[in-house]
Length: 371
Image 1 (cartoon, rainbow, N blue to C red):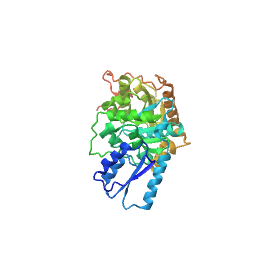
Image 2 (image 1 turned 90 degrees about the horizontal axis):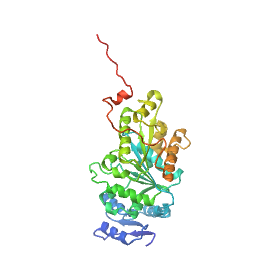
Image 3 (image 1 turned 60 degrees about the vertical axis):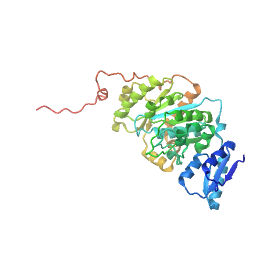
Image 4 (image 1 turned 120 degrees about the vertical axis):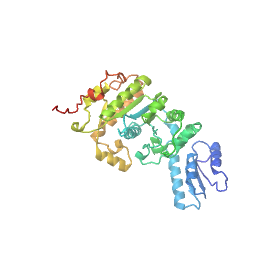
């Protein structure tokens, strides 16, 4: 097969079927550019999802054609996923938020960037929030249909599918995310997610999974091969309650996974809902990393479409993120079964003698004086 193939299925009665047939005879890595007269967004999406590089509308525009071939050449010269293999063990990380807004997605994006750019590992960011995921958005990328196609057709998932479905953010970082229509519920037993992880593991040196906490309940098998789970939390009463529950879940269901607790969006002690000491007493373990809240840096990151860790180069507040990435890489390389401060050691969700979580923090409401 040629490196770049241009086809014009204008006279085809079923262009999508013909493109699928073409994929069966082309060698892996062939870049296909199609052109036709049908101006249909659905057809375009289906063709791109089937593996073609681009679809151009006839009559052809010289500038559009030139750009399409330039992008194809750039993709051809980019490092192939198959070249990622090394003797180092694969590093699999899941980032889970105790509550919505705890910053798990922001943390996952920065960790993926650090693993790729700072630690030199080919890294895949897998965003499993199919309807509202921000993995691609945070990197200023279009998510594509790869993830939704994988869920709808798990039998299509293989190395070639991964190579075509992943959206590249850089030479060492690729993203698989989605923005599925919110009127279309995702009906899956989780097999597609697990198979995606398996194929990504063979193509990349590191996988960072942005894992919604509901996945722990619905698809617990996704944690089976995850070495490190990063639990992103805020120092609030609700986060403390859910951190206790999630830590207990890991102890019972995934004892092989090392849990690292990261307190995110830390502000001045005077405005914290719960102090660090009281929070640690509640979850019965130490917080491993504290990430300060920098509104200016977060805003700049969103505007530029770049990870927080990239925008904040040289910022002291990003230092804990770098240390976290190095800790994760060290755990993966050593294959140790126990993490020092990060080992889960909570007592689970046992009854506490009728006392409430508020009692544990010694929160008292003012009592009205009797007349």
